[in-house]
Length: 132
Image 1 (cartoon, rainbow, N blue to C red):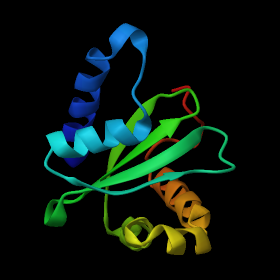
Image 2 (cartoon, rainbow, N blue to C red):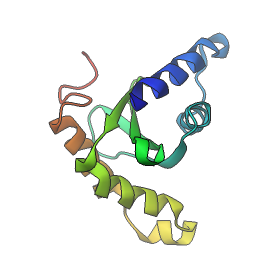
Image 3 (cartoon, rainbow, N blue to C red):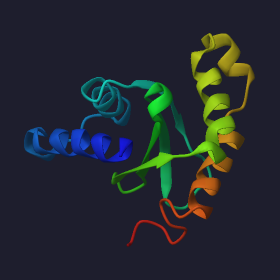
């Protein structure tokens, strides 16, 4: 249910795009979090994936977490996540909350790639790319 609320907020944003120009991913995620009363846990680049370029999470406390991914074509998709991904989400959220100097010392790409692979293996975002 969490992902559906985020998808609705992102859809509303797309209706407000001026002359087809999309806002930056980080702004869209922050706006969706605000509109759905969540908080951005992280927003990171995904390196080396054929189809996905960014992944972000919006937290809703005990209600759950929504993951938003942006494909290389700019398409956004959302999913609610369960306990299987909680440690990876927490690791990325801790990295995001750390000071910039600490972020530069820690490579978060591995955790982001593992999170994406875990989500795909559990049926989210498909493994066949963004064609479906």
